[in-house]
Image (cartoon, rainbow, N blue to C red; front, side, top):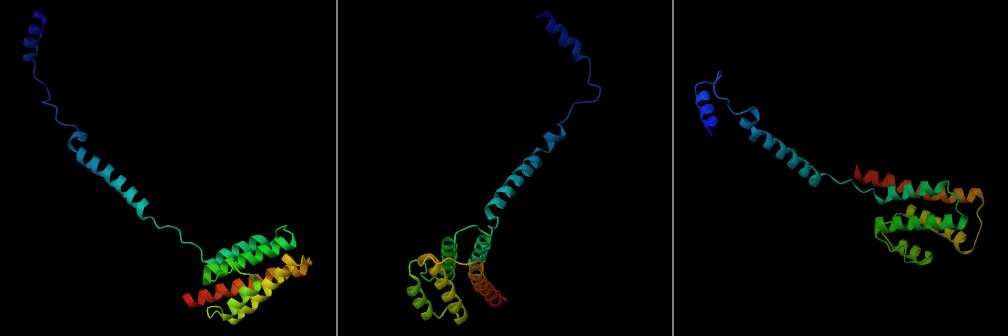
Length: 171
């Protein structure tokens, strides 16, 4: 105890050479650092919330992508024809809200003939594609290479015509 008293007396006489030590830079400016961190976090949260979602592709582009995927496939003729028929029907259902998947080809073609939304060119191409597909699906008709290519080309021309029509109406 005597030692502490002696140490206090000895150190009272020693003065600080540079004065008292003030607050550090971080202590003086802590509010700015906290504000910066909160701002960055808030900005990243808002960016995530309001980030624009990728736009869905229009039905015609989805159908064209699916058709191109089928082009060089090794599917049998009947499976190829069924896939082409189904993707055309899905396109028509998504684009024009026609119940294409629930109808037989004759029922759907009768419904399509009465539809004012479909142009005559689309109706004609649709009839050729669906009837050609039905031959392979139900009559077990074996396509030669040219006929398979023709079914693909009919579908491609039909969908490309639809795409061009949509691009003109959007312009």
